[in-house]
Length: 184
Image (tube, rainbow, N blue to C red; front, side, top):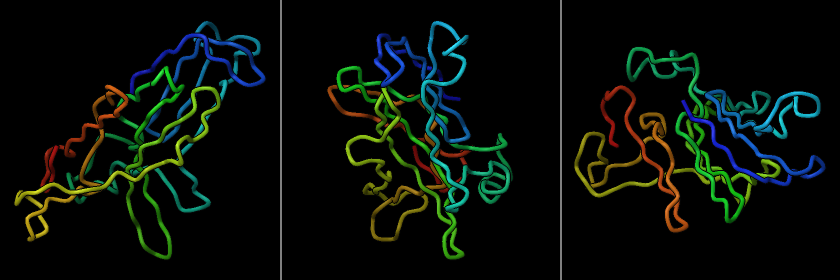
């Protein structure tokens, strides 16, 4: 489960300056709360964003049904944001990775996305989100037969904390319960 993060002295439009605690959930949501209290005007989140939209066919991963073919089940009940986000205080950006299940025209696809959220509003920044994809040279389990091991959206799990170093975001992945094909 993602750990909460705190950023002091954040100016929230129309709500003043707050020390903010950010909480990310397996339900693919991010919340910003006042870190100093939850009474009065601070009883509600300062802002909230969700990366699912059931009306558009975008859901969290059902940790039992969607992962049954991989591991015969999974911890659950759902899988959304697991890894702890990271904050860039210089740009006022919260980086977070979500995974969603998307159903369109009878087809089901899974997507890991890197979101760059404005810490003051939760709005996407830098033209995001970005779908995480790629491959590496190799002939390991799940290779494409042409010397490449592809990133497989449903088989890889973003579990560890993100790292921000010298302006670069590093995103570690692992396999679900080490059921092949998987690669970290």
